[in-house]
Length: 326
Image (cartoon, rainbow, N blue to C red; front, top):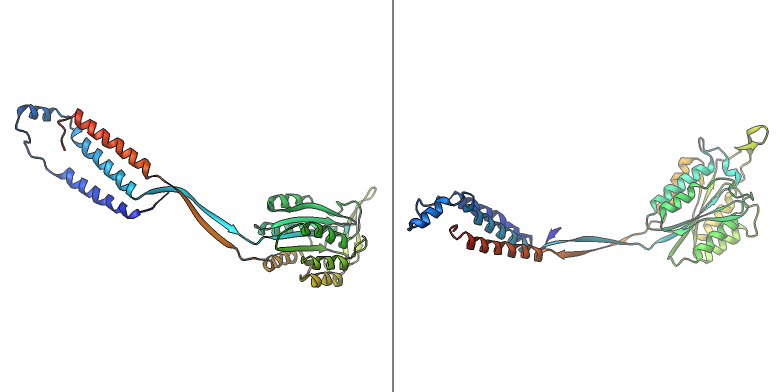
């Protein structure tokens, strides 16, 4: 609620001041020359003598508020951003179970950091592709950040039965969905802890495809340098740990990033992984344009109707109580 012409409200204190002096004004001891009028005045209810004064004051108050033109409505804020389509392509091979991000394993740290990134991208469409020996669309491009986060909660290493690291196929599937987008800016965030060892499309070819489509790829190498321990569940001996070598192909990831105009990062801890996603978030920020507009409904006609009803009530009251003269 607001007022179109609020300066008229300054008349309210003036009106109340006049009412105050009116109530303090002393009446003459005798106002009528006929005895019948005197008897009528004496029998008048003590409250009635103020009734018309209060009624008229209310009428004037309502008219003053109506002059100020009260309006009720909504302030609409429309945010227009040149939205970015971002596809998160994540390695879910069994090596992502390595526990070198103590107390988290690689996949847990990757999902946590990616969900923080998703929560920060409030105006962009995001999607998720996971890959091991084969790629899988986990979530199509959508503006529903909460849906993306829910689907990411179900990501785990080994969820794709065919193990391996098909980086080229993972990139290619992400490109398939980004290519269909009409967004002016398209980005892919690739995360892996290994080297391409399967699939019909090699990472360099996939990078060339991304470059031709104008899609930028940020590549993240996940894992500490050197050997890492991975839990393995044995049907008879239970859980045990094996040591795997560091197979991260940093040279390939750098080539992918360089060919597409992106950047390469190495995450050696959960904190570093979170910082990398934050850095990518800053690199892909866009300036927003904000448009505000207002839509109001005039409320003064209702006040005029109420004032009209009160005026009619005053006229009727004066007709019924003709002795009550203010």
